[in-house]
Image 1 (cartoon, rainbow, N blue to C red):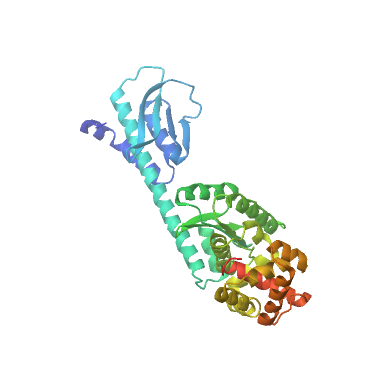
Image 2: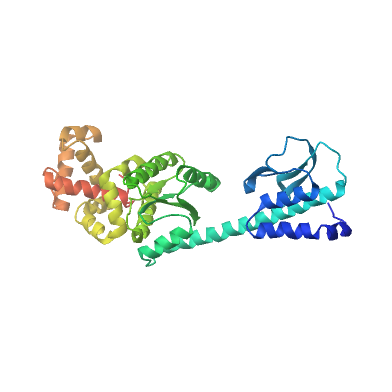
Length: 369
């Protein structure tokens, strides 16, 4: 609709008042009230994208729609502004013009909302980028920046990371927000991150961890999902992101199942991978690394033999049956394992070291068992 110049002049104050209402933060409730007062009839606003569905004045009786204007965003209808009246209008042209001005005000409101959302997304992205990159931020600074994003990190948090397909990212993010409303969720380099805080109740840490664990289990059906341990110190959130990332990477590149990573030993190893990978590599080298290299060089399966032997509690016959191999063949391989590692699979202490070495082998995406 093109509003005639003389009508624009007559409604200039109405337009200015509506723009002021939006810019001052009163938003569409005041805009609708201005329109209603000008026309002398109730005005209904229904714009789902802005969260609006109301009538001004609130006590207006149910009446029929005398006229309406469709609010569009880039040509796409996003809602309506309606004039309600059972009586004929004295000046239909002016009433329609007022509704169009209200629709223009709604577009200004939408632009402000989108602008604020963009700024907030950029703040989230920058914050997470710095944490993920290991930027030195003390706890007070992290808490302050979390507060600006509406997320209280003063009592600690954990990190959930997910790697959904591109067409599932928005649904993935919506699922996280629905389950954890106090979290802030952000897409970064194609991966989705959620910072899930605890509140200040005595059992808040346990409840936050339990909620996040249930959510992660549900989302794992659709994408690899990693969940860090809970970190009470906000300064450790960078490490928490690395923990969650490592789990996603492991699930995406190995034959480990999400359930296996619930095991406490695996979780401790993931934390060690994030905090001290050199120590983890040293332990691996001192345990099963020689077996992995031997298998790769000679196309043998010492790693698989050791895994079957340990899975069957050191019972030679059961391991041989699982491997479809003769007992003597398995016994020979175990001797070879002992020679290469200087660890005896038959001894309890050595078996524990070899078992831990196998878990590191699986976690670090070395040749699959």
